[in-house]
Image 1 (cartoon, one colour):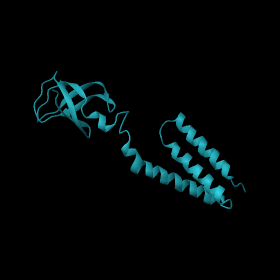
Image 2: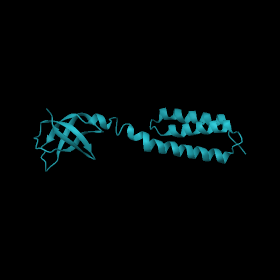
Image 3: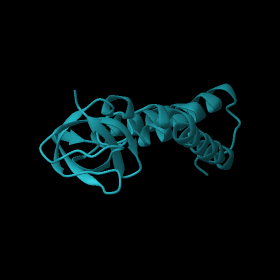
Image 4: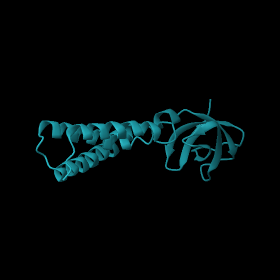
Length: 148
């Protein structure tokens, strides 16, 4: 029965890690790093069987993906190339009147979180055509104030 050598896992890991450059989802890299980890495990303990190697690869892959989604991903970009910290303070033009009781629409010169028109709300009344500044993104709406 075939039992991969340590370098087989290292080559698989490098191939998967390099595949991340062709498919930029920042997801395949974790499977590649897990394969490199299994390669190092087999290098340190050559008597490890194939089923243990595959189980170790699956466990390391799941662990790394879990760490990515739990701790690392929330600290990076939130959507479509714009981080949450850079959205606050953006200025747009109000295209529909807004009152404290009704929502309006604001248009931005460049897309914010993937859209150039957002439904917005405000604590005061603002007429269409005024410039507004983003205070916060709350779900699918943004909170704005009149720009000074």
